[in-house]
Image (tube, rainbow, N blue to C red):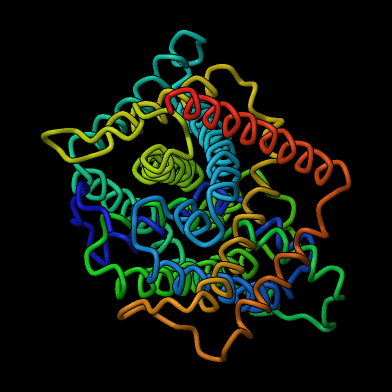
Length: 434
């Protein structure tokens, strides 16, 4: 357990961080993407994918209640399988998050510039991104309570407009648009479930603040399961409203589905309001990421897995991992202004699946190591859930293209070489000292 970081984050703070990270900009286009594959039968994909994601999240809940030190998935896998797998996890995790955050930050700018055309200038883009990354870094350096306070506010700000859209939209739903005559094919269900699976991506990032959560053995499992249940219910309601109002036209509005729904309900101003909502939603995701991810960077440095001790410093006044926060924000800013992160999207997709697989297997490993974890959560049903979760992830991995799998294999091979080279020079240095 971390004694140098303050446990100030409550159950609802962690839940807000999870919901805020999961519900990003994707929700504004998700209904059209799902409807493209399944039409009015799209709700079936949510139910199936909801069951599959629950299997994975139960594994997060159990491991998170046992390994409560800072670092989230890095700590889960490093403590379960050792430093080599910990090193692979932290690097893949960081590359995945940084490339994703760079893309999200640019999308926030693009939406803002479309509303305020005066911003459409390269210098102003750089200043805008600088303010976003280092403004969020500053808030998180001065205390996790400040960071989680912002996350709670942003979560409310992104959820409220969508809840209003749902409440108003139910009056405009055409029941015939929700009816379907034939069950979707297994291949269509599988393809759409793969898209939906990534709509739940974010738990692996948001859980990184586990070292600052009060009563982690109870609050981490509760927060994971509550947040996933809330997000699933929210997604189903949004899909129902979108399908019920747009009908067969739904797949045509992939750029901003909910903006079109709002436009049909309350007129042109609805499109503008939901576009602003999309920017707020993406900004919210960034706020959670810059709160959460540096904790993994800090933990890996503290353990010596990343050989940069500078990253494990704690602020003497605010008790936050300030060097890791500033470093992560700097990397995000650099990638955002360079626009050379697109190729790393492959790592983002396949890397998250590999991390989920590692967490599922960690449940099995921790149960078999014979260590008793006091007051921890245990999934009922023996090993059936982690095994089914692992099978689910292998199934999703099989959906990746050959080039994506080859790129990821090459990336892991390169990281392995780096790890063993670092280990070799460490041993050589120690033997010289001896």
